[in-house]
Length: 559
Image (cartoon, rainbow, N blue to C red):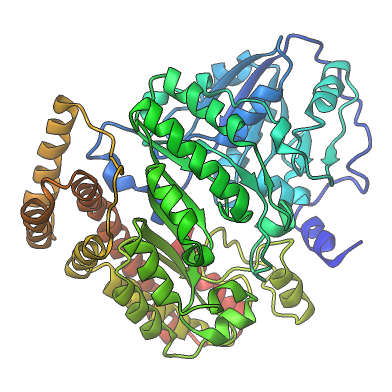
């Protein structure tokens, strides 16, 4: 048994030695009633909780993975979808079903556990797949009847047949990477579409790079697999026919993993947008070497991409080398970001602290880079070592992995012993957040980001109908402009926005979104800083006996 499997098994007592063996489950027969559950996310940087109080939507994005699995299900199965982001899961919903299917990420683990335990208590069969199941199956075998590891696109018909005839395995460990050009059209019709800020489609899976901390390459592989443009356009057609006229997230972890095919798709997307009157605002994630491909940026802009998320991680070359994020070293990262902004794509980005190479000035380095790059939505967090990653293996080998850590996201302290002492990391992170998300700093950065972002024709933002827009404006003025503690910074930015860009529809639209987003980011950071203050007080008064005790002490505030 591997060290990882041994680690997982000790966390999941009672699991059979051979979980793939048959468990004599009764056959469920054809025509199943299946309840698909997307578990709730805790409040986080990307949850945009505050904005949901201002706009007539309830959550950010739909569960694309579940919608894809729904399309793989036999045609005679009856499917229902519960999105726990805004819907209650009632006992009668569970009792209706023959099978409860769950997917999710580790950050959703608490609601995953609750959902599976409730279904089990009501005597229902359960199945789970997705990223959490693929990285930590042993933990979930104690909660679910069937765990699916890997991508089931090409064999789900076999899994479904096993369930129907009573021969389903406890564990399906799928090693092969499927040809996603054969994946069916996701079942968008299962969604309560009006509750979402954005729709989601997928062009590729996998990434060609080898960042030490990344589990994308270990779960989905280093060879990007793509859909042909016609397949993705068919998905946009389906959304268009459902009446969707807003943002669409191309959810690839690296849209330009195969830059030649990404360019081919972007050109076709431009044609589709033009023929439909540019109804969709597109955004995606990409590696920073996008800056070396101006032709691709131009095609993306013409296809009405507005912005892109980039994993910058660190301004420190030593930390990037340590993490094997060598693509970020080919060109000065600040120069790359400014080039992308000047060519028509607004930039949001992720940053990480806690690398072995980090010194005590890393927090100021990060703050300085983010300010100079003018990135308003800068997700700064702690380094984590997810299971299956090379970093996890290295920490395990070096005896630095914190076995009792319950970290689920980059906002939790690292799940390994860092070279910088934990109090230093926590205090530095606290100061970084307080600085980046003070109201004046946030809105000044938002203003400068609009100055640096050079929009191009035919970029066009979706038009909000007059009455919903009036409601958003009234709620924003009330909650942000009158009742908030940051109202002075709010009004200053709003006046700048109106004076400079009222007639520039793309900039005014994105600027207005940033105006609203302050209601989330400023408050979220303030609450997190307050929690960190409490934990720093504990760390300063308690004797720092071991790294594990310090980790556990700090962990409570993030739970």
